[in-house]
Length: 194
Image (cartoon, rainbow, N blue to C red; front, side, top):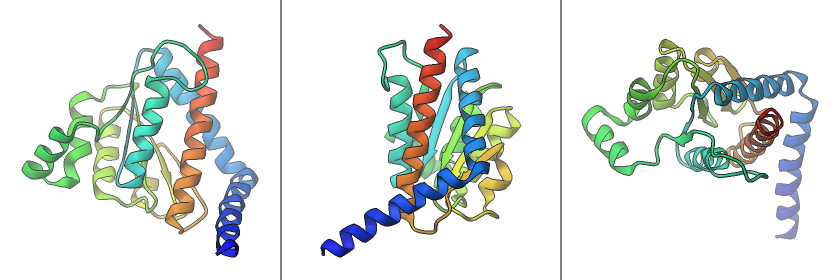
C-alpha cells in the first residue's frame, strides 16, 4: 500500500517536472497571464468550463478570481459556466448537452472576454462548440488539456497548454497547478498596476 502511495506521488511530481522543463508550455502560461490580465484590466470577464472533475476545477479557478487568491482586493468578473444547474439541465434537455457551453457563450461572451476550457482529452464536444462560438464572438479561447496534440481544442483555441500525460488524475492535478499559477500572477499584476 505504501509503495502505491509513493508511486502516485512520484508520478504527480514527475509530471510537474515535465512542465518545468517545457519552455513551450511555460511561454504559453506567460501569454495566458497577459491575456487574462488585459481582459480584467479592460473590464471584461473570464469564463471557465469543463466536465466532471474539470468542471470542479473550472469552478475552483473562477472562484479564485471572483473571490480572492492571496490578497484582499476587488472581485474580478469570473464565472464557471456550469454553476447554474437550472440552465444546464434546461439547455441539456432542450438543445442537447453538447450545446450547454456554446449557447451561454453566444449569449454573454463579448469581444475581449476570455473562455478557459479544461479537458483531459481535449475532445469534449460541448467544449469544442463553446470554443468555436467564442472565436466567432472574438472571445479569447484558452485550453488546458492532456497530451493529445491533435485534439479539437488544440485546433479551436488561441492557446492550449498540453499536459504531457494520458493519466486523467495526474493531468487534473497539473491543470489545477497551472490554474493557480495563472491566478497568482494575474492577481499580483493587477494589484501592482492599480
